[in-house]
Amino acid sequence: MMSEEKLIRTDRMKYVKNVQSSRLCYLAILLDVLFFVSIYESDVGNWYYRILIGASIVYNLIFMMLVFLASEGVKSYKMGYTWVLYALAAIQILRVFIIPQSAHSTFIAGASGTPGAAYTAVKSTFAFSAETWKSVETFIKKEWVMGNGQYIRCLIYLISSAVSLAAAAVVNHVKCVSLARHIRNTQTATEEA
Image (cartoon, rainbow, N blue to C red):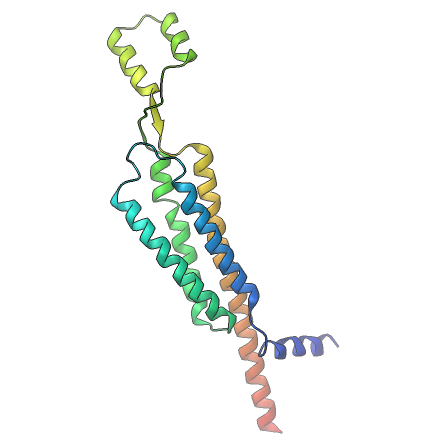
């Protein structure tokens, strides 16, 4: 009975679209858009106005187009799109080490920074030269290009997008192999009969 249900389910795949993989692709696009929006949440100085950001914008457009096309391809159980999804998932993981990592490890002089209570308490406690205090004040006024919260959120979006793409690829791969095996077995059975 179990094998008959499985046979019917596999035979039904010839007539039903692979919406599970397709929806995972749409989720990956949504997560990439959230990353894209989140990365520009804080506009610190002119750090974001560089060629790397321009390339990132172009890549995001190409990424969304390729994932959408792959989502349409996996609906029809096309195995070639599985490899496209795997490659895009790997690129999403690599992107973690480009803009988010660079922005999180960079700080620039901020317009909003004024020394707070901690600076005042330290200054009144220790007797350093005026030059030393000037450098401490300059350091305190600097801002991180990307804070910890934003960095973690960007990592979550990129990694979740990669996991969605990899899951879509795995689901499509398993279903394509299963469907191809089923079609081969039914052709062999009809030829023997």
